[in-house]
Image 1 (tube, rainbow, N blue to C red):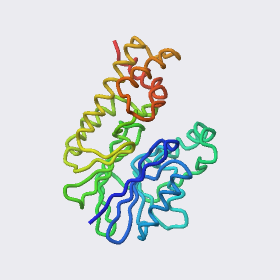
Image 2 (image 1 turned 90 degrees about the horizontal axis):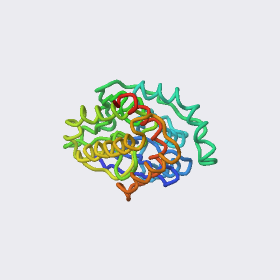
Image 3 (image 1 turned 30 degrees about the vertical axis):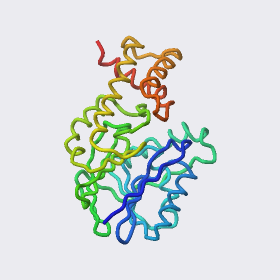
Length: 277
């Protein structure tokens, strides 16, 4: 038997989810939050379970999912497991992410990341305390260019940890990814996700396969609004960004991380301009 404990970071920490999968005699973490406070609280939550931390599994390499590994495994000899592509993306982007975000977060920013110590490949199965996880390599086509789904197969029906492939109740970060590839991944992996009892997402409450259609509808709404506002061009000014934010806020009034709408717009506008007539 396993129990999935969800830890949700503070709003200042982007309300990111990390998970502690409690096995009969241990704990497996999936992702590790962003800030000093949230990652220390996650470690305290793991310690409170009274069982050893067996491994940390990473879904992708964005700071809000990997920065907290440093505090989560401090003083422990615990494998940090990821695809090689996730490790490589972390290495390519860490310095830029520090430059982009350290000033904003101040003392809450974790100044050095802890990298994966064990690399896995697509479809590889790992066992911890009799509990099995299978990794699915999505490649590019999420909110960054290296993404994984971890399926807890020893549960029947299984459950999946999908990272930021799906957002639920939050505006989607699209400043590092490609929306068209993302949509293709959602279509390609829809049969896999349909077979899961629960989908544990990177931001928002867990759900089922209906989250796929919800995410696709969000992309459609966002991209249609952006194309109309920019008339298919790849340039946005302050007024266009404000109009886009207003439209998405009206369409999704209860969604968190509203600032993501404008943050993602330049990247998405360029992508759409490249394919729009």
